[in-house]
Amino acid sequence: MPDSFGKRQRRDVKAKKAVAREERRLARNQRREDRAAGLIEPGSPLGEAHETGVEVLPDSVFDEDA
Image (cartoon, rainbow, N blue to C red):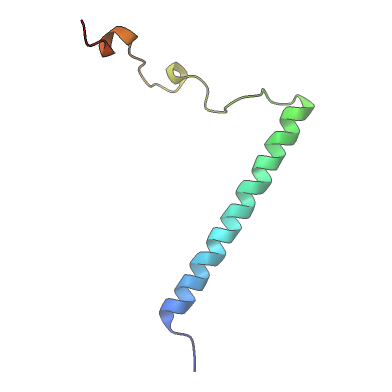
């Protein structure tokens, strides 16, 4: 009896996710090697909040007494 469409679809999705996981793993290992070799700076590749365009509010905004 042939597979139903749902089984094939689930199998295809699982295969795509496995490929994506493997690509992320390889990229992560490459970044680790590059950091160890000094090719890229250690730390998050996203940078600081002001560099990403996110506004950082001062702590006084969150004070309940003010």
